[in-house]
Amino acid sequence: MARKKVQIRDHGFEASLFWRRALFCLLVVVACFGALIANLYHLQVKEFQNYQVRSNDNRIKVVPVAPNRGIIYDRHGVVLAENRPIYSLEVVPEQVKSWDQPLADLQNLLGIDDDTISDFRESLKGVRRFNRVPLLEELSEEQVALFSVNQYRFPGFSVEARLKRFYPYAEALTHVLGYVARINDKDLQNLAEKDQLSNYAATHEIGKLGIERYYESTLHGQVGYMEVEVNNRGRVIRTLRFEPPVPGKDLYLNLDLDLQIKAQELLAGQRGSIVAMDPNDGGILALASAPTYDPNLFVRGISSKNYNALLHSPDRPLINRSTQGRYPPASTVKPFLALVGLEEGKITPATKVWDPGFFELPNVNHKWRDWKRWGHGWVDLKRAIAESCDTYFYQLALDLGIDKIHDWMTLFGFGQYSGIDIHEETSGVMPSRTWKERRFRQPWYIGDTIPIGIGQSYWTVTPVQLATATSILANAGIYHAPRLLKATGSTTGTLNLPPDDKPRVQASALHWREVENAMLRTVQHVTGSAHKAFKDAPYSAAGKTGTAQVVNIAQDERYDAQKVSERHRDNAMYVGYAPFEAPKIVVTVALENIIGGGGSVAAPLARQVMDHYLIEEAGGE
Image (cartoon, rainbow, N blue to C red):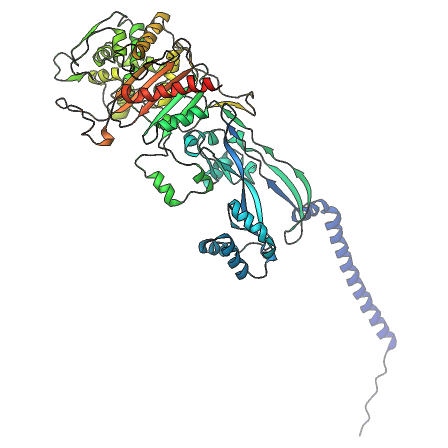
């Protein structure tokens, strides 16, 4: 058997192969380390700034801090809207080992209903366990006390305080102040368009109506920021820097709270408006609208049931009748038309018209009736205004024509926005040929002009428009825009309001005085339509009553408030000012669907408002 050949090993070759392989591995290792070092250089040196910012973004959080909303006061410094602390029961989930027993004990202790507990359990899903979760909002003082005594039994639960808007006078000021409510998608869109979204980063509520909405930017303030360090789970470790928020400015209104409450009480159970204004500067002393509602319902979050009840109520409590109510002005505009007639030379103070109880045109089979069926006989200007003779003003309107009436009445602000500092306002209608053509595609007829003379036909006004126009009359042509805001920051603070940009209504001083004296006669003379309401008043007042027809009455029918439906009854109107020699207050009253007229129903309310302001408040100061 042949023997196997033994191969002799080449140690030199093997050593050379080993060193070649070792060198290759070393080069690979060096290359890897070189790549690692190069990458570290890139990260630590070249991209240092970039990654430092990213690291800080993960480690440092900027938390916005909401500013305190400004307080709203009346002209005497009485708080009308404030921020009250509310208390909520909150819990940190990671500190609670089991939920069943604590929740059951809290339910018995604080009287929490099953629905609240169920909603709370749902809210726990998807939240970070170290974040606070509210269990119960707006604890009562009794609940706070009960929990405080028993807090040791509930680890992880605590009572937290925050500020929430509150309106202490509720319904009395709703249509003036408006309210704040939670920010919705529409609000976010509006803020984004105005580039103000960042200023509301920590704010949950925003002004929705009234003063709260109009002066939102002033009341809100400037958001603050807090830089905090967090761990990898997002828990706050420490505060690095704090930039405090700038609170919103306080507002002082021209409103007189006592007068506002008085006006609102006078409207109780009725639909209508009372506006009181200082003719010397346009300051709104009272702006009452009825019916009304509690704005605090919206701050807390109104239920769908309650909101639908307000929205669909036939009395429309959501409407601010002082600025959005559109009423035929009725005879309250007769003094303005008389001034136009004097200025245009269509009448003189001595001009007399025969009033048989109606007005008719030649060859026209229609009679425009006077409120006094048997007529007033021969009447001059003063009697026509004081006793509210319709026939006199039918003739005057016909003589003037709609074009002159329209041009003059716009000087007094009719058919235009009054300029009051809330957004909720309508302009009413001051009809003209152009307006009718655009609205109805019809020409203007003579028959349209005649009822304009007694404030009927297409003419509609808002109570605040009437107050502004009456103020111009009391000031012999000087215009002051109606203003709710008096000052910001303090009672002597500055204002950035637009100037009164309407020129003075130019008319003869003699003609102003003739019209004013006629309005004085309306109140003082025994035959004046407002005489009974102001009888024995310790001050002199001037005014004009009005009774506005809501539905048309056939020629052969007589109006009987007891027989027509409640919604078809006349409106009662009144405008006036006092004292006559140096006016301090202008008052307008509008009452919807009332039994009685302006002299018997509306004027007595105006008298009580004037008494309260000129006598009761003055006597108490």
